[in-house]
Amino acid sequence: MRMEATIPDARGATAVELADELGLSRSQLIDEALALFTKAVLEVRRGRRIVTMDPTGNDPVCEIATPTLTALEWSGRPTRIDVPGAEMERVAAMVETPKRPGAKLRQAAKRHRGG
Amino acid sequence: MAVYDTTPVEPNDTRSGFRSGVRALDDYFSRHANENEASGVGRTYALRRAATDDPALPRVLGFYTLSMALIESTQATAVLRTKLPRYPLPVALVGRLAVDERARGQRLGERLLLDALRRIVDVADHIGCVGVIVDAKDERALGFYERYDFVAVQDEGWPRRMFMPLATARAALMEPDTTP
Figure (cartoon, rainbow over the protein chains, first blue to last red):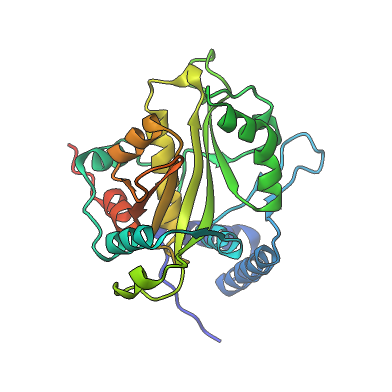
């Protein structure tokens, strides 16, 4: 089957470079990437973690996480919070009519853009 | 892929002598963070000292824990009056957030909170999540979270449960940076 995808330019350029370097067609590269992703999703659904490991054991194990894998993991084990009716009503009201972020939160978000 | 300031906790982190001054948080970090991480009960993300930071600072500057939760009420009458569905509301839970006392005054609490919100907003693109819950352990924590738009949903008792709708967090993080 044929698939089309829109991806960021930088990731596309890296994929093309990798395909050339490894002597793979773009289809082969995407096929292997999808196989790896599918395997990762299946493993995380079983409650496992995806890590890279230095075979000499000198470096610490490094976990591989993406928003999707993290989301799957989180959704598998939710904590239940039973709240009084009034509290539930307050939460529901805030969700229905969310406030715009205040100045302090907006400034903080600008100060800490990540990375 | 999103880039965060924190990474998942590692065994060496919890033996690094982290001390926030709040015994319950310090005990959690040194005794239970790795165990909970391994069992998947809750994720702990640590902010470590960077190469450019003062080497006198501790190796772990702060941490927070994240998990998913479902808010539900056995007193359903309140929910019936809202437009929301009559089943539990999925939320992200920032169960603990602490900064080492030797690293205070550098807005690290704010940095950790924003890092947590960024992770939650990213994850909410993939799963249902209507907001963020934090548990303020004392008056100081209550004031801290209030500054960043969390609203207490409990009138009394500690820890005081506080909430922020996901839309508020997303709006703050997605706002374009117009700083010259």
